[in-house]
Image (tube, rainbow, N blue to C red; front, side, top):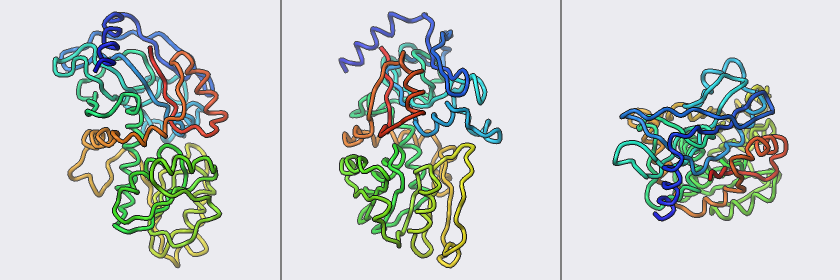
Length: 338
C-alpha cells in the first residue's frame, strides 16, 4: 500500500500536464510524442501509468508494419490511435493508479488494455482492479494470460491428457502453466532454445527439445509462430487429437502439411484468438469476466520468471527496435514509468 501512496502523490503532482506516448511513426521506427489528456467525465477515470508490457510477438509484427490489409480492423487494439501500418499508437498491457475518478476507484491500482503512455483517460468500465496479492509489476502479464486462457478453453484438455505446448514464448509458457494445473496431465513445453528449460522448471512443467518428442500427444497447442513448429505439431499429434493454433503470423504465408497422415489420423486443426471468448464458454462468459479471471491467477510468484527485462519508458523506441531485430531469449519485457 505504501508504494501505491507514493506513486499517487506523484500522479497528483502532474495532474493537468500533457502526457507522453510511444508511437510507431513508420515501420521499424518509433518515437515518444506529446499527448493531450482531457479531464475525465463522471463515468471515466484518469490513470497514471506505473508499468506496461511489450507483447513481443504481436507488437513486433505491428512495429514492422506486417499487419495484412485484410486484418486492419480486426487487429485494432481497444484504445489504438492512428491506422495501420503507421503512424500508430499500439499496445494493450498497461498498469497504473487511478488519480481521478469515482471514489471507489480513487488511488486504486488497475490494469487497462491501453498503449504505452504516461497518463490517459478511459471509461471506468475499462479499468480492471488488481486483486489483493497481485503486484503491479506482474500484472503486465494479464493480457497474455487472457490469451492463454482462451487457448486452453479452445483446446479443451481432459484429466490425464498428454499436452504438448510447442513454443516457449510468453503465451506458450502461460499455456503450459495453465495446462499443468489440470489434474493428472503430463505437460511438456517444447522450444528450440534449451535456455527455456529454466522457465519450464519454474512453472512446474517438463521441458523438451523438438527432436526428443514422441508421437501420440492427446492435445497439441502451437505457439511458436513458425512453420517448422506447426509441422512438428501435426507430426506428433495422436489419433483424432486436436492441434490448437495460437500463433499469429501477420502477412507471412505458412505451408500446412495436410498430406501424409493428417486425414488417416483424423486430426483437427483449430484456430484460437483472444478477440472472441472461446465458443465453449461464450454463453456465460464475456471479455470482462475473462480478464478478471486472468488477473486473479496472477498471484503466483512463479510467473515472475516470464519477466525477462525492464527498461525506462523513455528508452522504448530503442527497446522496441532491438526486440524486433534480435529478441534473443526475451519473454515479456516490462516498461517502467517514473
